[in-house]
Image 1 (cartoon, rainbow, N blue to C red):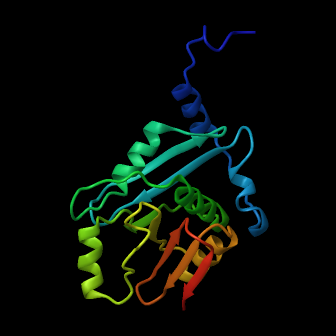
Image 2: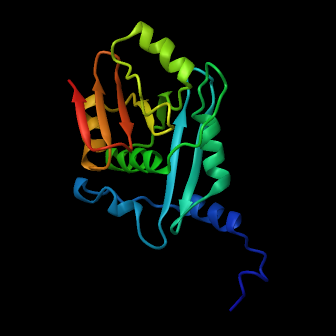
Length: 189
């Protein structure tokens, strides 16, 4: 038997192997977070931004640990695109997004409409819309507004609500779902 260290395997190399061979089982709604916990588990997030033209597809958690390099990439990707400022995104929000994505059983990446918002951006958006909270969790790096072409707002919101781990807002007129790691609550039609 070969010693992994002497064979030159690094944590990054192991992640590459997992990414190349990952098989995702279709979960049921009752075990959304069960699929994201346990030894040997990996967590992956896939998104693109129509505003910046960027995309991200990364494994951000493995065997009980967030991967700092991956989280740094996620923080940059989810930055306030208006100001260029970043914030450390709360891993719990990313977990809710990943669990919801698995429940939806899609290959399509999320379209990120809004992740982190600077206080200035939030104030500007608030001045144009009554739907923007003064103390939005976007300002704290704890929320995301997401869309999928292949799933309805109701399907996405139902998957996020099944996680029973944060706030879920339905915005059918604007065709997106808000997910956050705050208290469990639901709103919108």
